[in-house]
Image 1 (cartoon, rainbow, N blue to C red):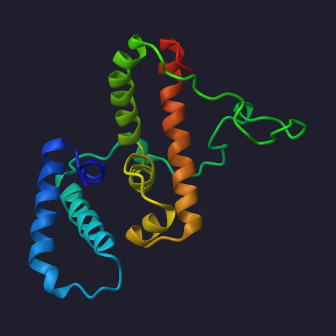
Image 2: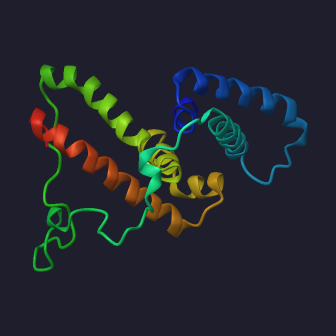
Amino acid sequence: MLHLARSFVATQASAEEVVQDTWLAVIQGIDDFEGRSTVRTWVYRILINTAKKRGLRESRTVPWSSMFTEDDGRPTVDPTLFRGADDEYPGGWVSFPPPWTTTEDEVLAGEVRARLRDAIDTLPERQRTVVTLRDVLGHTATEVCEMLAISEGNQRVLLHRGRAAARARLAPYLEVTGHG
């Protein structure tokens, strides 16, 4: 819950308060729970609404990334990163990240996680929410669609664009450190 709340607010402390407020709202509203969804989905819906309200209240500036439309006509991912149509696996990634097996890599993992968190934080709100729910918290596509009240197609597009943007933002760092 903390990871998801953090995707809507500016600080870890605010995210912690959102989670507390969510649990208070759950306790206060449990008698009104109608069972039209799972308790988990209901709680996450409360969390999302609470976090959105807090994020709006806290925002004092407009992020530079939000000044541009999400779809500017360019491909989301550089087409040269994919295998060609005549390849054995057309459309697949040309390369995958190498496995991290050394102690040095384990030490660097914390730094990579911090860079990844920064990359996720720069995503537009809807992409950030879907990527956090799917890739950080491990929810299924169906659960995410229910929680956010969006279609499967919209969830797929937001997830793809969010992952692509995060990967693009991490690529220069991973190349410099030898992980790309």
